[in-house]
Image 1 (cartoon, rainbow, N blue to C red):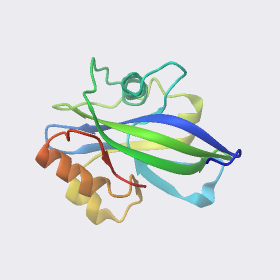
Image 2: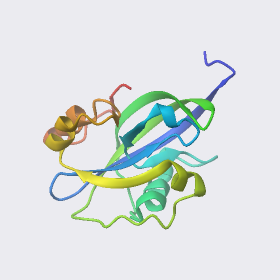
Image 3: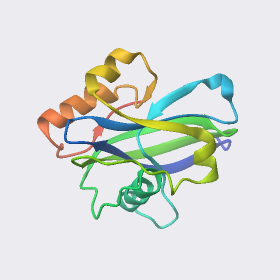
Image 4: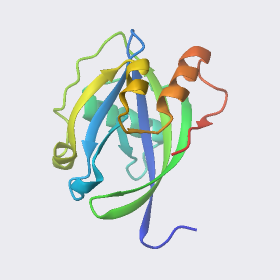
Length: 163
């Protein structure tokens, strides 16, 4: 059972991978809690009322990267993320989709004011480089699970990738 102080939320996230096998991650922080530090994360966010997770993934990808796609394919991962952001506690049921592109130049034209306050950049990461970086990334086992996903292809059922 979720505490009344924890807001339940449905989220959609995108693993955007280029032709070189690099993953696009955004870098950000909680503008209400500078002491929490910063971290890398996949494009995505909360689903709007009446929106499917696939629709939310396509919308968030367009808003946060400028990339418009017709389809995000089947879900490949799921996880439950509990976090604090801008003074609120969330418990977000996330669904991840894998989108492959040859290349893409990120555009932040669709960012909200909150995204501009919270996100300070993006980067295409090679998986070995990300693993060796010591950087905080969410999901925490992103490199391990993404290597497996890229080697084996999409699973029959989404894999739970944990925190």
